[in-house]
Image 1 (cartoon, helix red, strand yellow):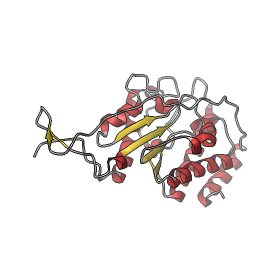
Image 2 (image 1 turned 90 degrees about the vertical axis):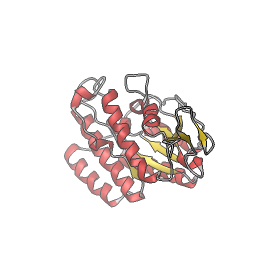
Image 3 (image 1 turned 30 degrees about the vertical axis):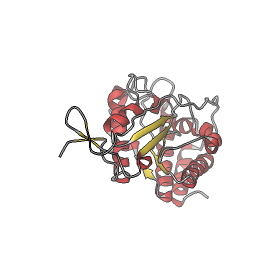
Length: 250
């Protein structure tokens, strides 16, 4: 069932833009493209620099993250990809795997998602903006998000939606592609509200147009870092029991 807010937004959008159909795109192969591994040391040990090493939590598995996304989550124009930056800015969390793949639509992820192995406590979903550009049927998009969120919860994990970063006119995107991005992002926010799912709201992160992009689509390092900072702050209230692995000695 379409949420009430989503239905109202959909009616307004269709009245003004005439709706949209599914776009065609090849299905990308889902693979882990990055993995961070860090093992917390035992309590009360001393590092050479005088810092006290301690566990991130009573149950470290509750401080773990896995990421699903497309090239916006996988790439920022540098060797320090977004998942690495999340690990750097939040060392109290352990990024177990980054499953982001260039070209991975929500439509590609949703059918295979139930069969993919996961072990992290927090599961971040960035996919969906490609589906928006292509004008994929909004009812299908809503159902796919709901199914992924429910699957994550059925596994005893916590889903987190990022929403969509911004793009600029130029390259492969036209004005209507950007309008669809805006509308579908509003729908993702409605889904997050209606399902009580953490929402990073990437659309609210300061964006300075093409200056912030590598190629009119992909965030450069500065914009990507702001997006990851917003994601990190969204995770903070959910991870209050996750203390830094390296803490100053008392």
